[in-house]
Structures are given as C-alpha cells and as structure tokens.
Length: 431
Image (spheres, rainbow, N blue to C red):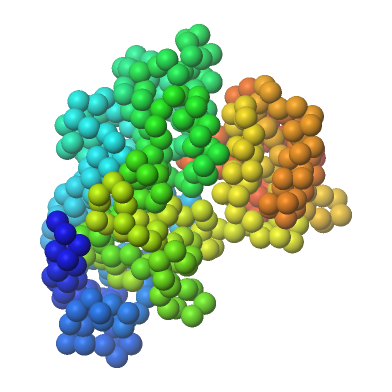
C-alpha cells in the first residue's frame, strides 16, 4: 500500500466512523455542544473541528461511547496504573482488528512463523495478554501462555523448560529474570534459547534496553499502545513504534493551546479510532507526552512512527520542589553497569520535608558510584536522594502488576506487608 492509498483508506474509514459516532450518546452530545452536525464533517480535514474526549468521559458512562452494542464480544479494561481503570467494549470486529494490529506489531518487531514465544503479559481484563496470545498464533508462531503465573521463578522455569526463541513482557521483569535464570540453573542467560524480546507496558530508557540486551544476548524491541485505541511496534531502526494508521489516527497537540504541532515537536498524543465499532475514541487525549518521528523509515514501512512516551502529563511527581518523571529516574539508575533492580521511596521526615531513599540491587555498585549517583540525580533530575543503599539480591518487593519503582508514601501510606517488611530491614523510619 502506498501512502496515497493509505490516506484514501483513512478518508473512507473516518467517514464511516463519524456516522457511528454521531449515533452514540457520548459523542452526539459533545458534537451538539460544539455546534456540529454530520454534514459539517466531510473529510479528514475536518478532524480538527471535533472536540476532544478523555478517559473521564468513558469512565463516567462506558456504554455511552459504544457504537454497536449488538456485536459486543468482550469487555477489557485499562491497567489502571494512573487511576480508575477504563472499561472498553470490543465487538467481534474490534477483536479481529486488534489481533491484526498486534500481529503486525510482532512481525515489525522481527518475530516470525515457527518462533516459540513466551507471552508473560497478564491474561485477564487487560487487553494485551489475550490479544498478543491470538496475534502470536496468527503469525504462525507457537505461544507459551505464561501470563497467569504467580512468581518470577515460575516464569524463568518456563523459559528454561520450553526453550522459547522470544519473550514478551514488562522490561523490568525480563531484566530481573536473567539473574534468576543463572541462580536457578547455573547457566549463563546469554546461552539460553532466547534471541528476541518485546517489551511493553512501561517506558524503557535506552540504558535499560541495553542492559536487557546484554544480559540475555537478545534483540529487544519496544511496543506501545492503549486499550482504548490500539498499538504500535518498533522495527529494526528502534526509533519509534510504527503506528497502524489504517486502524487509528494519531495527532500531537500542544495541550496549552489545543493546537497541532509539527513532526518532531513534543506534545500530547491524541487518537481517533477508525476501524472499531465498539467503544469509539474520537480525538482521545491520552495524556501521554511524545512526538511523531519525522521522515521516512529505512525499514520501508509507510506508517508514521510515534516515539514511545517517556511520561504522562498527569504522571509527573514533585519531589523536593522539582517535577520529575519515573522515566528520568529509571534512565539515570540503569546507566550504571550491574544494576539488577531498584526502588525509590519518597516520604516526609520529622520536619515535614521530602525524604528520598534509593535502594539498589547490585553486586558491583561501589561507594564511588553511590557518590556519583547523587551528582547524577542532582544534575539530571534536579534533586538529590537522602540516602542510597545496596540491598540483597532479589530482595526488592514487586509492588503492583507492573512493579512500581517509585513509592510515594506521602500520597499513600499502605503499600502492603511486603514493602513494610522491606523498609523495616533496609530503610529509615517510614511511619
């Protein structure tokens, strides 16, 4: 398909989607308030006339955004990492569309027919596990459905037993499993059967990608997506995910003035589905901050590339008076060799001031590196930690489904007994 053919297909699908959207309670009301009728929307050039929608719109009444209730097949929810999970209705058409979307992503990421792929993404309400499972089978590969396993040891045992050629999951877990693989089997993980990985579910700085590729001796690609919209995957260039533009449209908007920005300029990613018939997303504000990679890609794909977001606009954390993102902290810590895992705990000291304790899982972190970490935080993240401590191997608890790395005790005091026990052993007073 040429770029011109893609644009023509987008026009056709956009018009059909608008016909559906004007019949939904959510969007018909939004369009009415904006003074728009279906006759006002005749082509993609009119996309900017449409009002924005948000997660809150769908959370308020998830059924109001569904176009075809008669063909509903399954309900999925977002991960809920940044708040209340959003319920998204998939029709039979949407299930097929998302399976196609994920199959394309896997092929773009280098997977192929005959591969054995261990899928460690969670199976359940979150869409990725099930959709990727079906997509693996769609490309002719063999799936090992490991997303329901309860422990890291079980995941690693599956890697050793089934000898998969590829692994799909959250980056920090894929990294953690390397040292566990060596401990459990006395074998170098670089000599395992794995040759390819696909990480999704969280931002992955280059320092962490390189660490994963080195410890497993694999080629790691990044995926990015939203339950409400769709997803994209990296090609061999590793410079943005190829967005499936025949399935959904992507814009980058300056959130301060609500206007589009040029390719290469950072803003909020805004999406419009054009192939779904269940929950529709019309100019859906993702709160993800990123940009479109300009120019053609040497891999030959005609779709535009979206740089995987480093942070959410509503996900920045104020620590010691400075706004920072989990991505920036992740990038700084994994720039050091030998780091297996880490945890940052933010609390208030007895004077009511912010306290930041950094816990590092590493056999090779030296006092000099600890000292330099203070400088690196102060130079790149604009605050210095109150303490940096080396902890025992594999002692850092997994908090939440994705393994939360920044624990803000100022906002929520109770993160469970496992964290409490960890802090009693390694931390200062966090009462």
